[in-house]
Length: 326
Image (cartoon, rainbow, N blue to C red):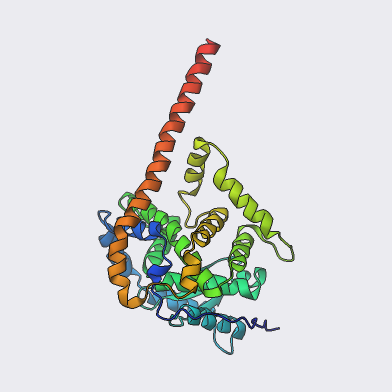
């Protein structure tokens, strides 16, 4: 049975520029990525070898394209999310897949892919949040780099010759950028659905939801606070190491980052109409790169300095234990 959308009044963020929601670390990571030796060559080779057409053709052959007649309620949510962000409506495909996931790909005309299991786990508002998240990726120009990472990871899984030692720096830099880009698109999703509870509930279910199970969002938020604030320096190093090969930050981290953004007042400012428009985006983006790079560098330095101190502490304890045992 078709699921009905809720009649919720939305503010339309006319002419909003992606820079209004982009996380400083996302922009800085992307700027760093473009400076990696060989990055442009790898990008050109991947685009030349694969391009967008094979991916789109594969979906047309083995997925359902959303329209007014196919998954009509999903189409309504897609159009509403795009209207909130004043964005063009991209193509969206539903594919039969047991993993709860969605992503946007494409070089020239990016499109969205939603796995069927995601529609079974999430309620309609949460599905809209995921769709808005992907619209945010497309509007921020993430799809080109996401597609590049998607192809590299697929090729690495089959040991394709293209993915050798020389592409490893590009792959890991793309993974680092991807984790930061998710934080930007979480903000875009919030601006589209305009309800923090919906976004955080979505992240909770993506972390560990199951069909028919009722979860407590307050407990998950408390879990997020615990993960972010508890533990010593060595714990922070372990957290960094655990995330280093992933495409997404951990859900508890994403919830905490989103709450920080809300608490900063930035969300309320945008909702009141105080945001950057596309007309002034380029100048603003250039001005922000310095601040973004500073933020990114400071975060990295904190992790690496902490790692150094942690290693030193462990070494001292091992040496002390050795002396006492001797």
